[in-house]
Amino acid sequence: GFKGLVAKAGDEHGKTASLDMWTTEGRVEDILRLFISSNISPMSGAFSFAGHIDLPPGKQPFAERMRLTGDFGVGKGKFSNATTERDITRLSESSKKRSKEPEADGPNVLSDLKGHGSALNGVATLTNISFSFPGAKAWMHGSYGLLSPYKVDLHGTLLTTGNPSDATTGFRAFMVKVITPFFKRKHSEKVVPFKITGSYANVDCSLDVGRVVKK
Image 1: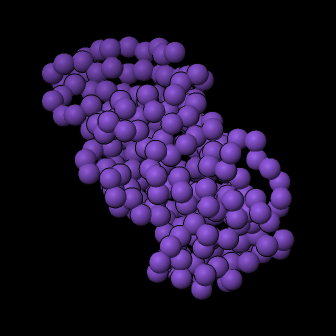
Image 2: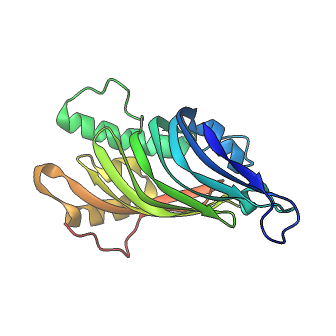
Image 3: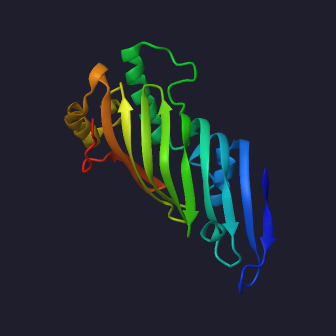
């Protein structure tokens, strides 16, 4: 639902829309299509949101004019990027082998994703983001460009009982195997700093080797 007003603000030409918005029965792919011109949404799943949006007049794209802030959640989310899905599945399966606990929703289902987001001048800033999938929990923050080339700059911490090297190949796998022992915790848990950078069309998920994670 929503409530608000559309009114002239100061000396601006045109009117500004100012709305409080909320939903508990949305789909994240439908919401993302409002802000991202790509035909393929980066994620799908049930979506909840409560926040505020101001949309001043102007000829700039909708995502550039929009000023938004709110809290959101995604249930049983799935990534559309095949590489991201494959890495999550491998990491989840490696944890499942250790715990021998079956997962009813499948290994690549992301759950309990929630956090706070704001948008200004075409850039979304994400804070207090947390999510989980079988065998792992993660916390993340950073920014996501809502305008082409959709620059991604996210940094986070992964707590997992699986082996991060199972979710990588080549040189990156070698780096994970070298660094992972330094992040061991009790019960085979590992704390792994990671980053997601690049652009929506060419995203790179890798270790954040320049950042120290407190145990």
